Structures are given as structure tokens and as C-alpha cells.
Image (cartoon, rainbow, N blue to C red):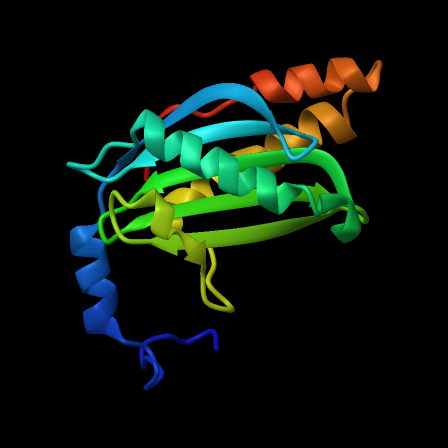
Length: 172
């Protein structure tokens, strides 16, 4: 399909333009590295305009992540995870990404109504990160590769370097 002068009928140009018109930056903040479920966890908050991740939201997400990560070894987890607490425009999201055996990752997405962290539940099958969450996960892939896989020295030093390599500010 090298000639795109004629768009395929499945391409929803109106929906794509509507998404483009509504696209904006969101604020990402790196939070302190924590331990949860036997894992070293890098924590991020992500906020849509007009939304805030509260300390209560962050604590609830960390409890949820800890319960999920406790079963990590059964899924081949290597003990490093990323937690994204997202106060989205249409609800709240918690993503737990874990590095597992074979250069793979494991991703769990939890969703719930805005401001009700006790209502977070596993997302539907096939749900994947939004564009803003994907930006954070892309950074994390690079940080993991740079410091843990390609880094030198003791594993503990590599993990410390990985834990300090964070993305904060506006993400698009």
C-alpha cells in the first residue's frame, strides 16, 4: 500500500481528526521508588487537565499493585516493575508493568470511575496503554535496556541507575 491517495474504507478520518483536535499534554511525575509484592517499583502519576492524583489514590494503587505483584514469580517476573497511576479524563487507570523472563514484559491494566480508587477493577481483555501511558512505558523500556540489560557492574548498581532514570513533566 505505497499509494495512499485513496484511503481504505476502514480508515475513520473523522474520528482521527477528532482525536487530533482533542490531543493535549498531560503532566507526568516520578514518585519515590517503592517496594511492593517483593518487587522494586518505579511509581509515576499522570494527570489529565483538571485532574489530580491524590496521596490516597497513589496509596490505593500501590496496594493494588502489591497484590498483583505477589504472584509475579509465577509469571516469570524478574522483580522490577513500573506503576502508573493515571487520573484520566474519563476515569482512573492503574497500570502495572513488570519485566519478565525472555526479554518480555507483563502488563496489567486496572480501570475505575474518577476519584474512586476502591472501584478499580481489571480492564477488559485487549485493553492497552493510552498514548500518554505508552510514552511513559516507552521511556521505561529504554531505561531498562540502558541500565539493566546493557549496563555494567553489579546488578544492585544497575537497578539503582534504572530507578533514578525517570521521565517527568509534560508527555504528549
